[in-house]
Image (cartoon, rainbow over the protein chains, first blue to last red):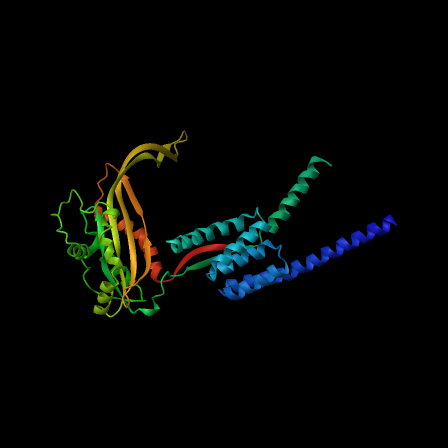
Length: 117
Length: 252
């Protein structure tokens, strides 16, 4: 009986792992395509792909980071800030994300100072 | 597990993590900063002149009007109206019934921005600006105040110093020392007025300082241009969208 329960738990954990791996694969495909189109300057399409990726897998830090970059290029600064902050929440130690965020904040804060004047 | 096995496993883990980290793409970006004013409704811009305070070694009104005009002329959005800068101080002196004191280079008439308070009422005079607007075919009007004054500061400053090390090679070190500094401060406040209605559309203030060693004699005009150089990008960004070049990293 104990062995049966153990096997069942192992099976369920395995299945959920596979499901998560599938989600990550789908999200990764969107992220990859987003990078390709971003490299051609198609930021709107890129941002759409990264939005899809974060919907499919909200724990995918790279997708949130790229979405931050995409929103920044579209001038959607408040959305960019939220996306970068989500990326850092998922991957707090990622220096690439931190550097992107710091560079963005310089511009974002400057823009807000102008707005406040 | 031997030490060698541990090292091998650690190297493998390092290699795997390095390959995981290598999925990144550096990409050149141009982040757009939106203009503060929509100038679509205007075809012309008039740099009308400024109330100026601070040192009188330069005519900050004329210099600022001339510099802004030349900068705006390089942009395509608006046609710059060629007209002399208005003497706003004299205009307000007349209205306030003030006889201006004789010019004295040593003691400025308006030492700081506060001294301009009464004269600043001109910016609220919609009829006056509307009249100017009518005269110049309803342009966007740029006016405001410019305070350019001498400053002195003393304190600890850092500067690089070259030293030759034991191997005879030059090395740079940062040394900190107490110094007397002298220079200038520039505080412009730009006011953008709708020439059709006389209404203020937008106001932007800046403050910049340039300090030099007290022994160095820097001409006021050269310092003025140095400081205006720092302010100009933001001034121009008020009227047109600016793109800031940089790079970001996309991750997989």
